[in-house]
Length: 251
Image: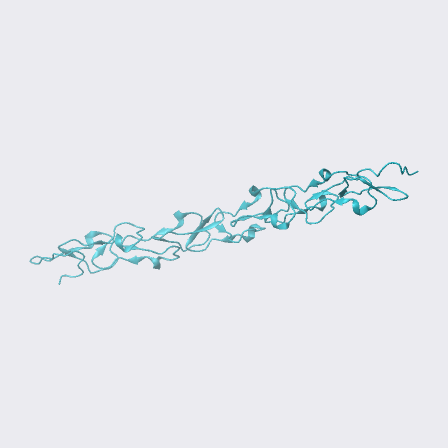
């Protein structure tokens, strides 16, 4: 029988004929409630298996790697998993955009990941630029003129070139020969190496600009380009002199 002398307790609502339990996914903290609409839904990002709950504290937050946009969830399985290529470290998240993309150069194949460390770097010799990759096949082979490690593509520095693909270290970038230089970054062929002009020479490989080409000294001249040593600077013939540097002929 219904005891009408007592108000309906928290976690319940009472009609004229029955005492009813607030269902899972809800709670009710007042007394004397009369309809199911008085049972408050657990907020987005939470769920509750409990019935007759009297406080919002019974609504449990969705765990890391998950989110839930709706109200009144009754089980943790209703919390949506962050998709592959993403992770999420917080709890009680209410929006899908709380799932963070793995950084460019990394990929992640599973759903519901809870840590950034679950994102895996692309293999040496490959790179990825967009972020949020879901498979190792999204990592592209490193292009000519660059080398790739840590998931990023790094251009070969000036003074070098690189004509192969899938390279993994700056040591794979070939230095321009002595007698030449290159100002270009990311060069893919030795055509980027520019020969030092006549009247000059350059002894070291990997020179980065024209200033590295040294003038032939006073009393000498040099007619060819791309000379790797000062022995290419010829002495003026007996009976002649020359007072300038970097001369390109005897005249």
